[in-house]
Image (cartoon, rainbow, N blue to C red; front, top):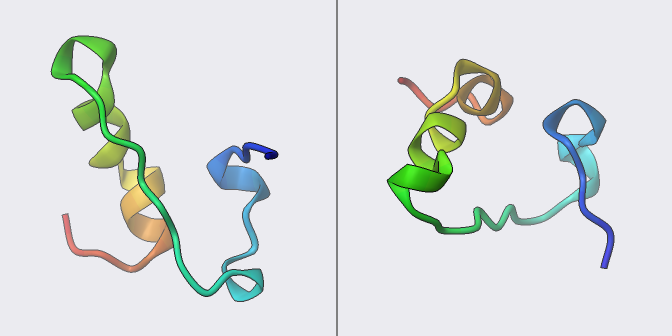
Length: 45
């Protein structure tokens, strides 16, 4: 399985996006709610 950085993802090539879970201590919330990620899917912050 290949992993992608957000900058490498072409949204039109995928039907779904899986967001891995994690812990706050590991920076999960910082990554999941980053503007870079939220803008990728047009999700309001």
